[in-house]
Image 1: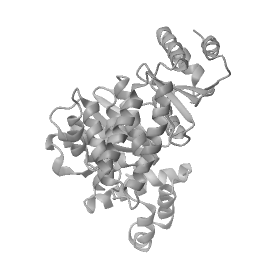
Image 2: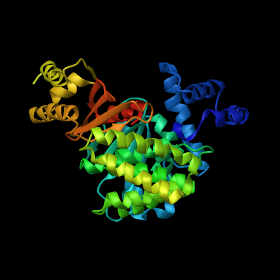
Image 3: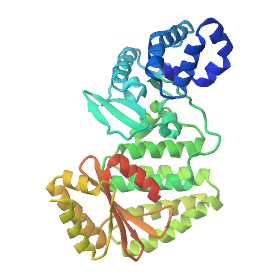
Image 4: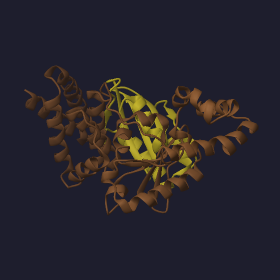
Length: 288
Length: 105
């Protein structure tokens, strides 16, 4: 619940809260809690017995529920109550954690598993519980393109702040790196779904400046789940790069083509290099 | 196979010194024996230029080889171009992702 209010809100309304809702001591404890400072045992008693119930009542009065729903128009109505229950169950297990449910479970009749994301300061292993896949992500992931995509159709126990980044969070080098690793994973016959997701989010952001929501991402990902995935990806990426970067920016590709041609003489069996060279040559041809 | 024995066999293949990074010992001893053998054969393939190679975006003189072992363990072997191998990293998937970013792959 403390994820739903922040210290700035309390400070802004301090006079009002002090006069009508909280005692001085209670307000100080609440601020301490919101600053993530450690509470002593007395303060904990105050917090859980008096402060938290008051905050809960205030939030209920203003129509703010403990579960925040984003993109409700895309969510299947019958999935909302079970998703809320999952968040409540997860909260019991991972107290004070920021928890979010997203993915095809919310908007598609057919789904493989339910994706729950828990943002944590600590490295923890992902795990499965029944058909729920619990993914632990570092709190820094909240600033990522992936999170900005994810939270657009989601239920969470915290206020997700989706905002269009003012500067590009992804560089040409970044997207080339993601593409190269994706191709490598496909060639190595690995599960490349996560890399494909990152690649599509990045490529679409470069092309349109928009961050796809999970439903748009799901539909686009499906287009690449065919046999000729490498050919499709090559065509898609070539167009995105050629149409969205200047020739000067794309000169970086010349450097990479040169490097990879040299490497492929030495590593003759490295088939990924041929894919990179061919893709980047096509980009340069299309751009010119 | 114990990690020390695995390291010894890898060093024999590469015939040079090598740093072992990540939770190498723990991960190596926790994977199946067949997977341990796969890892060693893969190192040999890397040396003999039989695997896919990727180049760092941070330092173009660094190349790397990546390998998935089982569902959750990953290996990264880095090398200076035309020169010596640098590090063999072995760890769980999450740490691998961080390491890949750090190396510019």
